[in-house]
Length: 392
Ligand SMILES: CCCCCCCCCCCCCC(=O)CSCCNC(=O)CCNC(=O)[C@H](O)C(C)(C)COP(=O)(O)OP(=O)(O)OC[C@H]1O[C@@H](n2cnc3c(N)ncnc32)[C@H](O)[C@@H]1OP(=O)(O)O
Ligand SMILES: CN(C)Cc1n[nH]c2ccc(-c3ccc(F)cc3OCCn3ccnc3)cc12
Image 1 (cartoon, rainbow, N blue to C red):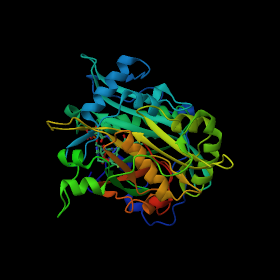
Image 2 (spheres, rainbow, N blue to C red):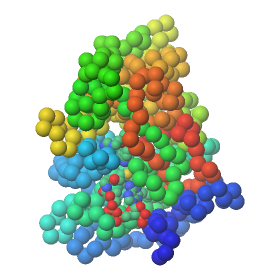
Image 3 (cartoon, rainbow, N blue to C red):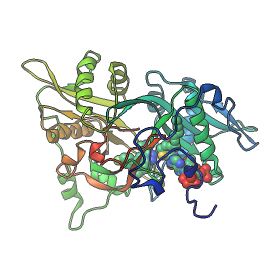
Image 4 (cartoon, protein in one colour):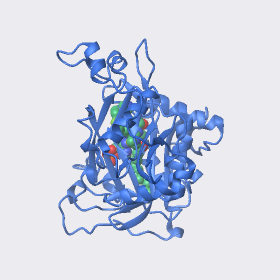
């Protein structure tokens, strides 16, 4: 109807633009939980030629279908030059954390061809908001095939994942998007640190600076061959208890942050080839673990370039500096990312990242990433530096 800019989102229990600044609205859940018997038992209606499917990503062929749908139809940059290319092993990691529900890996197939044409996922997470730890779903990988866009399929996918999350007695969610929706709890800038400037310029990701030559640019971004910090090493299984303690302490300073336990740390932060890398600093004298850094592997397909098909990107994940200066720790992260042949190292301006971005020669990206909570109001929102949550 008239004046409704977000017909779907204005019907949802999310902060509404019209409510911004209304101090009378309490922080916390917007709607109370309903009785499980009152949750809609059957799936939402799809247009008649489509059907719901649960995607069992442990099955090689199903994981391949999901991979192919996302590879061809998922998020592109504003200039449609790059598209995220999450790998199959990354998807298995992202979608099977401790306590995951297979029923939250939701697909839509065309009835005739059985082709997978849409997807949306949730994974369970405990998210602390100030002093409250809330069971939430982290919703991600919302994707509708390019040929089925602008048919209002997304609201149906969102309502269906909401219904399935409700069936597990969970009433809140966290998600991010590059688009503005009602209503961000914070808006982050993303930054890029060139590791392979020649390739980044060749593919149009970066441009040669004014009064800069290629050789001068290569020199500008050159890094040492190995990390500077004594005791800097790869994280191992035996480090999980110490890293968990370090991480829980560190994240307690932020208003919104995951409430990770040892099982979560083992899943999300133990190194997994081509998925996630994590390093720590073990003090030489007392073998205490004093610092930690991590990044995940998310390549982007390069659309329409003769010489290159993939941009190898590392994304800053969780970093903790208690003894080593954060600047030095992150420079060591850049060094190991370059050693692993990444082309670029990306970071959001969340947590304490703003303290190293410019000094380590990150350049600002061309867009923003907005963070959202579903059915949970945070009065006035928060600053990116008050946010301790990184979603994949
Ligand atoms: C208690 C549990 C709760 C769980 C649920 C929590 C909430 C989870 C929410 C999901 C979180 C996902 C997080 C995530 O995955 C990370 S953000 C990445 C989303 N995916 C992509 O960008 C891939 C490429 N694009 C597409 O596949 C389509 O364009 C999509 C599917 C994005 C929209 O398909 P479409 O064919 O282009 O559009 P219609 O079907 O005609 O629908 C239009 C309506 O969709 C609203 N829309 C557009 N983009 C959105 C987005 N990224 N989030 C939420 N809503 C989005 C839009 O505002 C409009 O609603 P409005 O009229 O009210 O404005
Ligand atoms: C977070 N997760 C939900 C995926 C997701 N969805 N929507 C997005 C919009 C921006 C970023 C993002 C986050 C950090 C970053 F350093 C660069 C980014 O996008 C660059 C532009 N781009 C898009 C595709 N290829 C390149 C991620 C996402």
